[in-house]
Image 1: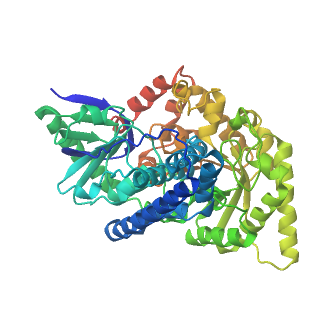
Image 2 (image 1 turned 60 degrees about the horizontal axis):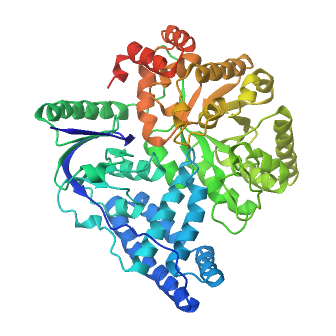
Length: 576
């Protein structure tokens, strides 16, 4: 009899193959003190050296097997190990507290993980958290003389099953043998999205019990479409999934056909499907996946894990690469969005009981205008190399937007006076994340060039529920009529003033939400790159006029499940 495990679909696809358990010894660390601090510092230094040596070897293998995209994942860890601040922090823990090197590694890693891994809506910081966890485990393996699991030992086609899969594990996979991935823990992080996309693997994460329920050699079906793992399937289940795999392969081929076409609905309405990016590698991935622009450029990557603020020149060079790299396709750059849980070492911030509602984003930019001014100058200088739009995050009042816009205009005037070339068509907008702004959208709309709806924060604020908190995560409901009504209110207010509206949260890449957003008139969808071709293909099949009755019924529904059922009934192809 087969066994069904439910998890989270992290990467589309279906695989049928035997299981290969990639399970190593836990590395529990207990607090211990030492009488020889210098010896512990030497041990720590040696563990850094050994780890760097291993990672360089793994990076070279990853580059040879999977290309630069995979090698870049390992480069992130090498950069961490090469950061003097990380070693200094661990050394300080040893010298001040008199603890062993193992405890110093654990304490320091835990400090960073509390910062990185709370950011469920920020793929870049989630990836940093994953990298930090991997670095810490590698350091501890050398300190404790424990051998880590070795994915390179796999010599036959199989599905990797693990408690979690680290970036360096994935970078060592041989694409000839790895058919899919299953983990006990995890969510949709940039690591799984990036690497599974590179390998074209189906991935199911967060099953909780895969490593205890599955034995080496068990035949598995990994359903990366619905987030299911079937252990020891029956013949009937095997036949069902073989047919489903063939259908999915044909769908992928059809999605690829739209890559070089415009995204135009069946009744001639043009939509823009763009990508959310945080690194140059993300941009390259977006282009390969048919992105029609960058709907969200997260500029935090220039600031995180740095000992000083980036200079205007450093920022200019980075932004220029993005703007020029998209070949006249629009790049929407979000100004620095940090604060609360996203800390910057070079910008002292207060400790807050409720950081999501605290001193963050544009609030910091207005309180520390020298940071905002430097960033805006760099963005304006980069604008001549393509098509740039700028948006301010977390705006709550019209006065905040006016203040930020005034700073932008002052910097624009100073640069023009100095003879610096600037584009004349830089659009200025704002992320709409706060319910109060949605209620006042008709007042904001005449002031902006566009809105970009940050659905992740907007939804959790609408329901007063931290979606990172498992006890209330069920309240994060993208299809709830309250969310749909709020989004429609914003779109209608913007369109009344002739302004466009985008969406850059997870909702934009949800196939069940796409027909509703189309019908409500959303102009731009921005999402993780792996969803772009699917959403573009779906949009091209839809008729926006014929979607109006569905939108009407959804807006008047009573719950998210009711809305989901309405969409599936109206569009049968979403019932797979």
